[in-house]
Length: 560
Image 1 (cartoon, one colour):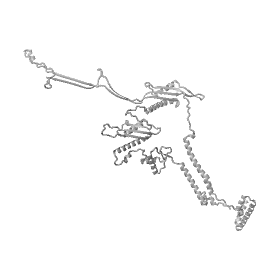
Image 2 (image 1 turned 90 degrees about the horizontal axis):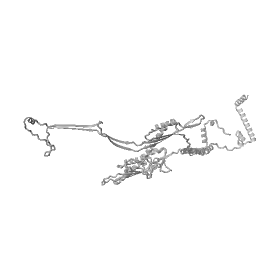
Image 3 (image 1 turned 90 degrees about the vertical axis):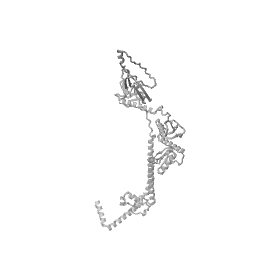
Image 4 (image 1 turned 135 degrees about the vertical axis):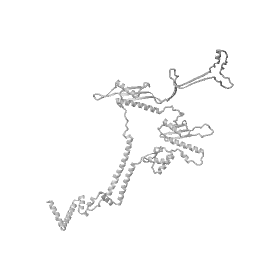
């Protein structure tokens, strides 16, 4: 007889049924099923890890062999995966997420050392070394430290420093100054400006005692002399900053002109160009100006005034050096003359004493003096030249066609006045201004579009999508073509063994013969089944008459 699932099996959940089916399998099939599931899981995990492989970034580039060996040893101790760049350059690559952390950890260990010996040479100084060896090690250490400092510049790939320090001697009165030579190896496409070279020169001069700026020589890898020996004088060569200043000044004037004309003409209807003639000469002037003496009519400023008056009465005693003749003439002798009458009275009078008066006056007047020191600033504007082109006025006629018409003379004059005020026009400087009205031609320049299949971003996106699709295709192929048929074969029940028709009985034999299409045997089997059922019904009526009566009663009531 055919097996019919019971009500308990039909009501059970699918998981229970599948477990029951799995338990009915043989041990060999169970092992195969487990291995297939493990293979699928391993394939999925491997595909996921392959799709999410870490991107490697540069940890250090252009390191020396010694530093590279030390860095690799440190990475191996920290269990950090690494690889080398295939394009050369001595780059060490590590996963992107660990770059910053590993750099900090290596910096704590003093790596990389730069490949140049520094003051760490003095740490390994042996006991009992000579003074000459100490001096040589100190010079090597100083050269290495200076080279490391120069290599820290972004444009410098490597550097070498050579110090020439004279040995002091007590037999020489003149002290020889040290000198430094710097050889720079710049990155491709990089150049050093004048200020950067000057910074390197001053760095060397400040790092070596007694080193003047003029004794520093800087050379690049191509043999070009970067430093100038000007003995502290200002470099007379052209400075790149001057050109930058001129460009910024001209662009500023252009923006002014376009900003004041844009509200009138429109943003795309005006073009301006300005040329500035600059004077970068530096002039220093010192003057002393003395005004002429004041005339009698002009008031003069009195600085100081001194007046001395002296009066003396009586015989003046002669003085001087004893034994030396005086340069004062002798006075006439006065002898009394005796005479009678008036003469006697006159002779009795005493002659008056001599009186000496002295008066001195000194007046000091202020003398006008003007001391003037003038230093003219550099970057003065000598002359400005401006050219402005204004497009025709756009106009739409009654038919909707776009037309262009030139500006009137008054409008051109107004624009000319506005530009003069915007640029600070000066006739004394000799400035010039030209305003022209013309029709602008359409811009026919076409932008070359990169084909979609040549776009680098599209190519990268296509590669990423292709990788994901490949993974999905492999997984689906494995699931649909390998795992699904295998699971189906495992879960399918085995086919029933062949049974002969004579051994079949009842409904099973009837079903088997109906499939084969044998009519005579089918009728015989149907009759035997009917007889068997009739026999069972009679026996049931004898054994259970009440049940049979109820069944017949229900049939009669239904068929009514």
